[in-house]
Length: 431
Figure (cartoon, rainbow, N blue to C red):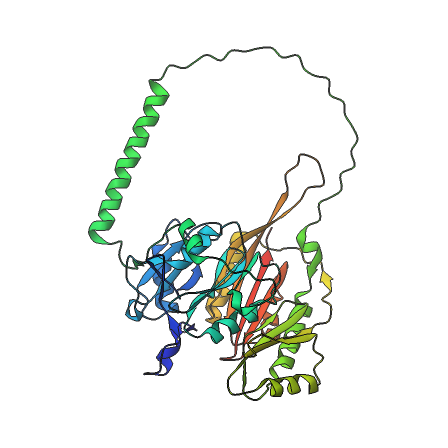
């Protein structure tokens, strides 16, 4: 499994690998388990892909681009079993389900359990993973169920998880676009020259066609028909101002403090023989799941019943090999926090600050539409800069850095006990 730009099996030479690189659907082989990053410049992606691949994933030499509302690129290492020209599973799935901006799912395949997670049209960095262990896939899936506003939750029918549905992977992949893995340094030499020549030829043809239409095509004289103007009746209509999203934001300070204390409480709950999965905080609650190793249900139930933590509830899955629990958090107050930067200046400021700190951050342009309160008037769009941060620093540490940006909203925080990694998703509104 990919973690911090390295593969788990690299940390323990000779240990069996817990993730796979490909699945076969209806006779077609698709690459899985790519590491996905936002693409800032879709018009000229190669320099960005080369720089990111060398800095984020050592040895990565293959890539694939996902277009759409939130362009991304995925990278992988050919030595792990990937091949140039291989179709990429995540691209086919996302394009086939482009009517959903957010979904989470696990598909059972002959090679393993393919876990996918797309949030606001973005494939999360760990949202394309082929697990060889059903328990690991289920544990990862359960940890994300507490996150609100999923367009769809997909899981095998035999898991018997409420509000999920099983979907035919072969039918979905047939509807999706097919994108292939390419060599990162592939567009060089003869291939690049050929592309340039073809572009020049195409440009010349377009210019020739335009000149022909402008100078050699007879111009038709317009026919002017007088129209009697209609009487306009002015009406006094009271127009209420459209509320701006930053006028009622969830207080990021309260959000991050609540998440920190909620996560700390759950990590103290450790039934012997059970392994905790990722902890998810949505602001209203924190939730996680445990996977059975050598423990028993009776041990886990006793720990849950006797804990001093005030649980909102817990439940075991039908197999008895995993259970989940959650804690309700105190209400998050709201604040008014108007933006202070435009998009260009904010992106420059954040990139510069994180470069100085030598910390990675993924940025992506986003927007939200607010319906108009007037008839026949389109919704008003407000722009924001969306960010994703993966760090070993807890929310109390990040507060000092993030809270200085006005217009900040925090949407999701997750914590991985295995490795102590925090994952932050949020946005900053812009002028």
